[in-house]
Amino acid sequence: MPRPDLLERLAVQTAERAQAQLQRRLRTISETQGPYVQSGGRRLLAFCNNDYLGLARDPRLVAALKKAADESGVGSGSAHLICGHHREHAALEEALAEWTGRERALLFSTGYMANLGTIQALLQRGDLCVQDKLNHACLLDGAQLAGATLKRYPHADVEAVARQLCSEGDRCALLATDGVFSMDGDIAPLRELAALCSSEGASLMVDDAHGLGVLGDDGAGSVTAAGLNQQEVPILMATLGKALGCSGAFVAGSSALIDGLTQFARTYIYTTAMPPALASAARCAVTLARGETWRKEKLQALIRHFRRGAEQLGLPLMPSQTAIQPLMLGDARRAMEAAQHLEAQGLLAVAIRPPTVPQGQARLRITLSAAHEETHIDQLLLALQSLRLADAPV
Ligand SMILES: Cc1ncc(COP(=O)(O)O)c(C=O)c1O
Image (tube, rainbow, N blue to C red; front, top):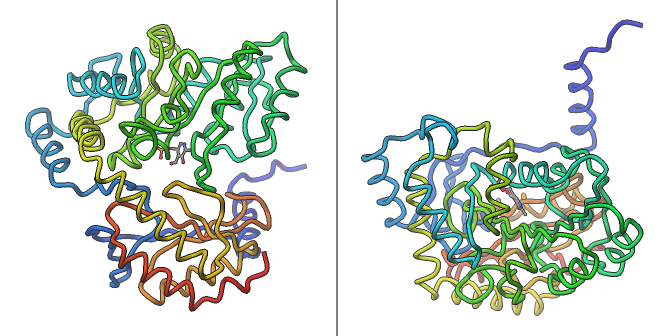
């Protein structure tokens, strides 16, 4: 038999996806201003970015980035462990460790890389990795990369976690969960999971990409909001590209964890350090996220406003108290049509379809930001009302 051609196989898979009408499409944005984006010659009011505190365009972040770029140039020029680790990186790591109440923090260029590298450094073949079925793709990929046995439990089902951990009591085990689930917006049962890890001798890792800046006293995230310390959640990961309005990520924890990751996390070691100017902007964002508490408060008020209005309209809300407010539509085509209808009215909210979410659970993923005003939410509610989603079969 002749060897099958890889690109042909990929083309067949791409065609199958198009036939199922589940094709992903790229949208090019030319400009952003507050919650508005310019796309295809139109100005659209966006409800789909993760800039939860409205910091991405803050002039102070832009000034910090420009100033650091004037001093240090654009690229870091090298990996952290060669000569790319700049004092801006060190200062940001210190600020993040202090904010999250951890001994130390380590920067990664993206959240995806932070999760891959951390899990791959911690786990070995034969170890156990227990994960929520709705965890972000990069946590799942990390376990696979490490060659660990991956067990996925039904969403937020603490009893299932207990069964999975108890049945493999003699293996090293990592329990990894999103703090705030990226497509559903709900918060993991962190206290229960931490108690279970403690009694079962497993380590708990929380990916707080969507909780940092938004939840907890001082905006320190879902782990702080749950009252959990470094011992209870020894591995905390969060990103800089969401509420902090920048890009990049970090892992925070004990000195031993950070020393170990510095030695063994391949996505930390074998890659160019993030630009120092970006680290400077991110440090400015940390200061603003902590100091300007009105951002978090305004976001909470907008979330309440949206939910109240959506409830009155009978929209298919999900049980989320965070900035991620999906509307469950079920059918992928219906979700696409809803997004298109909104766009025709000048609003941008994306349809999330399988395989990103399970079959039959397509949704509009609406995200709110402190950059929005109540009038924007009212505009969205009015457009949603005209969609007659309340009549949609789910
Ligand atoms: C829960 C979660 N973890 C990790 C990531 C990856 O972070 P990054 O975009 O910085 O790669 C994302 C999304 O981007 C996410 O939603």
